[in-house]
Length: 156
Image (cartoon, rainbow, N blue to C red):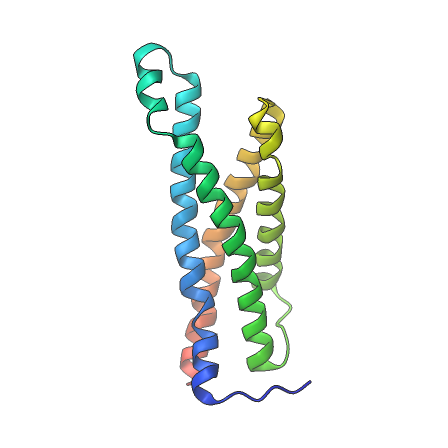
């Protein structure tokens, strides 16, 4: 199928994915902060624990994580879709493969929530390992994505 796009649509398609993903990277760092606060709350005692509970870090972390899951899936689809529409193919390389792996990792990480809510440490530890790896990959994706964006801009 050959999809022809007006030039203005092509430009918009190329520039939706990068800012969305950079915003998600920043949001991921915030989710990490909230996760650290949850662990600190869980390990605290006495008045400190009471004070930390007021921060509702667990609720905020769950909400931010849910948002991240949904927007990462959408962002992945937008990136792949805009590349396919504009170039009539996907570029099978590290950026695509890492992005797809990250999407799978965040889905698995989120799927551990029922076990974490029941207090299973194996689920919490797996969640943490997956998300630390995800954040590392996300940082690399930002760098490689900016390189791709520079190539797109240089072709304009």
